[in-house]
Length: 209
Image 1: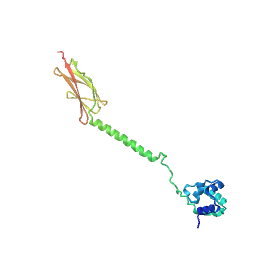
Image 2: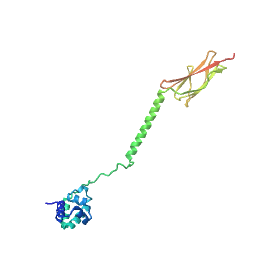
Image 3: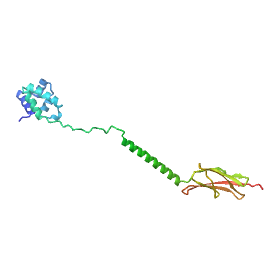
Image 4: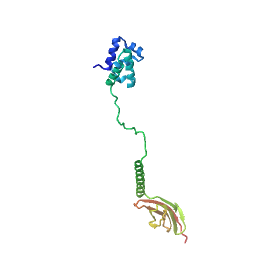
């Protein structure tokens, strides 16, 4: 059983037409005519165009057009198409409740971790300590020297080993008893973890008799 390509080629050869001659008659490029004869469907246009080629060539060669069309439909390979192709959604971003939940959990987790790290850092670090009084080299003309400043609110303060009351905001202010032998005031701030910050202030005590 002859194929459509063989039928058209045999018809052309019977007419003793070259491909160029048939191109002039049908206005179809000889490359396309050759491709149809060789049934090289991959280089040809879509089926509707090929169908038009076969009709035109059949008419030019005196071949029954209906028979040529029927054989073409028999020989033409079916077009493979994807069934229910998966839509391409990779490039589209849609905010969903799931994303909201994941982002919310992430934010809360990050906040908790940040707070824990901050608290741990405070716990293992020496407390801050700022001394307003006394200043280095301060002359004391009585038996009391004012010790004041600021530290962490949860730290303990001592001045020359004497406990000093710390306010809720970390400020402290006390009168420390001194004598002629006192040469310095040592202020210590001690954190809950036992870390210490120590500041020394030299003083010159001059007690009037």
